[in-house]
Image (spheres, rainbow over the protein chains, first blue to last red):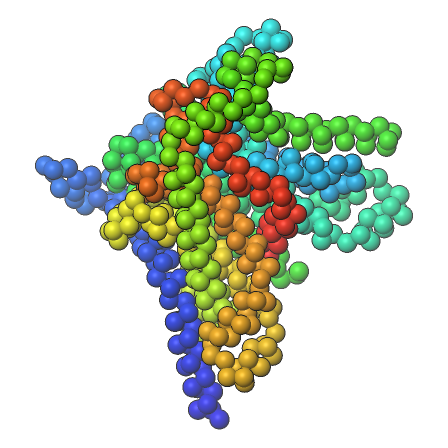
Length: 297
Length: 269
């Protein structure tokens, strides 16, 4: 009997690893090995024909910390995250509450809110060019109605990052709305009825019952929004290219630029390691705070 | 009070909806008008297809469409096979090291392929896949998100079905194919929709690993077409943008309910 169990266990182990192997190979090739290789190459100098690349320890990191552009880009990205995360979450929540309420034409609301999500970021950037172009753009034309001067939204350091932020919020709020909608639909009807019997206003019901029940979803969305604030940079290629004078440059764009425009791989690698470090912190938040909720579901 | 508040709320909801779709509606309108009419908001101006003709002649769009279509298909097939096998192993088999490997897989949710562009580019070149559609799709095939979804879906399949199939003489792959895959159909559908819309829209990685019109997907083609250096005017850019988003947008509008359901289903688990 125990031999039989043993054979079965070994069989499962063999099958398990066989079934995992294709995914394991690809994950190693495109996630784990590249992470290790990035770390490794961040410790070497940039090789030229005359000076082959050599081990320089943390010098690339020291260079980055001494580079004012790096700090500017970091500051930009923190600002980008600091605005897009809370604002898109609040808008998403409002959208979900509205799309889930008994307002007429709810279907239209839902479609309108969600549509930007299915567009490529590049296309979204093209649409917004129309709004931002100085003189011809929609924003300028609206401004002109009120006698405001023409503004070069994308061309001046004070507004360029804001223009980028608005496109991001527009793009991701509808996506986050879906998660809130899903969560709203799991709230039992009796809670609403109980609140009505107690004479609680809709506002009280929303604030004291709905919002607390949405907390896990909010955390989940927050993690996604944090990842997006690193990842969503496609529109920079169309709208500003990080300019003017790096005012709207974000970290991932800077990594791309360093590696593929300036061909400075080691510094790009060092910056990638820093981003991976931040993402690990986000992962830790996810694992320690979010996975707890599954226990009492 | 309540009546008035509701009225204001409804107005707010509509205002937001109108703001949200206005960029799309405006670009749609502009795509069918001459540039000077479009920028002057000449609402009475005649409609024209000229922008589409100019845009269509300006780039090998058919090829781009084909490339995107191939890319999305290849990624989907790869993901289907890999996530099914790995998801099954995690859900139904017991073997040493399983939990550690599962945590490693989940790590990939955060080690974004987008962040590893430099080394992934080196890897793709090493494999001789630079400037191929397979090279664009490959880093996304072993999707941790997909593996996780499939694991959840397979976990809920009762073991009795598995046993019954085995008694009938079905091999392990046969059991996966005949019992588990059909039962997880809704999850597959949801995942397929998310995958297709993600990869249809993906930009940065394809920009890096493609170098010719023969492999370039729509998004990269569109960005090159609309680049300011090319001096294409804004109505033509609108027309090109409309063309590239039309298939996915139409699919979304037609299958809206399923689309949203798909996102819901995949999102909450």
